[in-house]
Amino acid sequence: MAYSFLERDKIETLVFTLGLFSVFFVIIILSMIFTATITHYLHWIRILASLILIFLGLVLLFNLNLFNFNLRVKNNKTGLLKSFLMGLVTSLAWAPCYGSYLLSLMSVTISKGNVVYTGLNLLSYTLGFAFTIYLIGFIVSEINFKKINEWSNIINRICGLIILIVGVYMLLAQYGILL
Image (cartoon, rainbow, N blue to C red; front, side, top):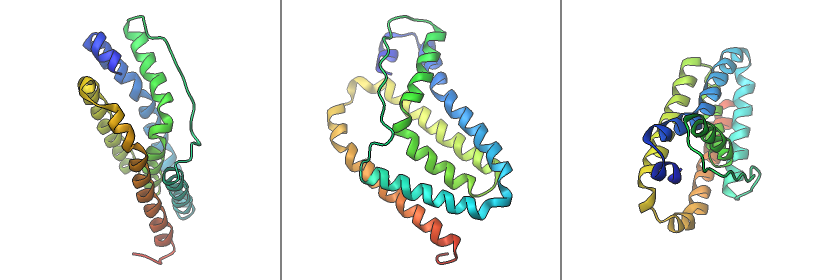
């Protein structure tokens, strides 16, 4: 990402970002279709969503590397298609990083059974993620990544605990134990 911002044209960087988030667009559309088809099974979907959140919370909390893979691509050519494809590949390669959070959001929103709610929530997530990535790309030369990396395990564990608590809450609420 930093290489794109520092050594590429602004339009190539924008096309890279579009490629990066085209995966999110497909996920939003598929989630909306899925939400529209599951309304008769919402009780079971909510239970499944709760269990997924509990599982993902435990994965983050205990730093289990279940979704790890590595992809290295030489990026020495320019062009809009190349930038878009690099964004697409980067999105797939980053799936282990954002996958737990995105799947958690999808579980919660799909369990509501409202197509518009699902689409808007996932779109909000995508736009917020895109803005953050784009902003970081511009200021990446000023960021001390070694310092951030020191805190990444703690941040993952805190987020994992929050996701675990939400999953347990959703499961208990489904059975009327909580509000």
